[in-house]
Length: 330
Image (cartoon, rainbow, N blue to C red; front, side, top):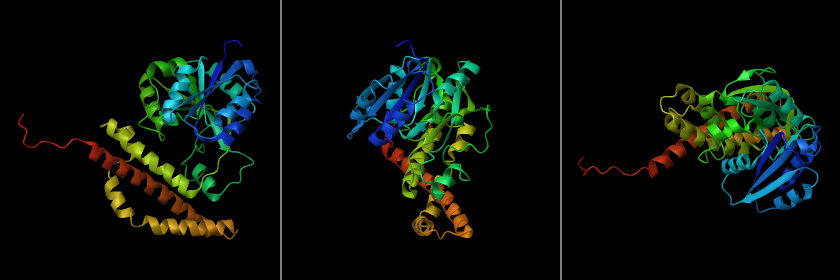
């Protein structure tokens, strides 16, 4: 093949069926197949991931590498350094690409050739995926997951919109100025990297025509676990950047212990109530008032789990700190 214009990096772990659908969507791109390469980094999967990749050899230019399980940050970094195109697009293994997705990312970079400019595409739920109130909340009013409600096409954004999985950037800029840190693994590893790249001028342009679709539903428990992981990352990020007001405001880790002391006993009964309301939703009996209550409980529960993650990370860090030797003289 000629040298590709775009490298698509996909980290994956035990999602063979979802990966197959993702690769199939990339095989149906309007962009000529010799204009892009796909690099799949298998992060120690134990399912049929290798077989899925083999099935797509010949359909697209695909390179597949397997590593011992090390987390998404390590997988993304390896994909970055194995890529050969001047542009790198980090793509999620549970997303589907719109037919013009890659062509639109290339067009956006043609319009914005500055080395420091990254492109954020648009993600919505896959049309065939049934949507629950939870899914509508986290991408809508709750703004917990790829929420675009306040953005306009072509808007220039700061590093907090460097969302890996739906962003592309100039390879040289990333390779020169920073890679993903395994400490944030997974959870905020993309925005944390964006904050370091911002020191070298990173800006993100929202390109609404670059469309992709999330192809995996969330449950309430799974999203709570996600928020807990994010809370851990928020604590570490704030701890590594003392005195940075912007990061402190984003992480909101100050006062986490006091909040968790107040909220811990409230969490179990409120989660029980969420389950009861979700059961009413499943029966088609969710009234407008019940939906409003459910949304309030979702927001509170996700914030509580983030706070729980912050406190757990804080306590883990304290356990790892060496004890001070008070008998030692200096």
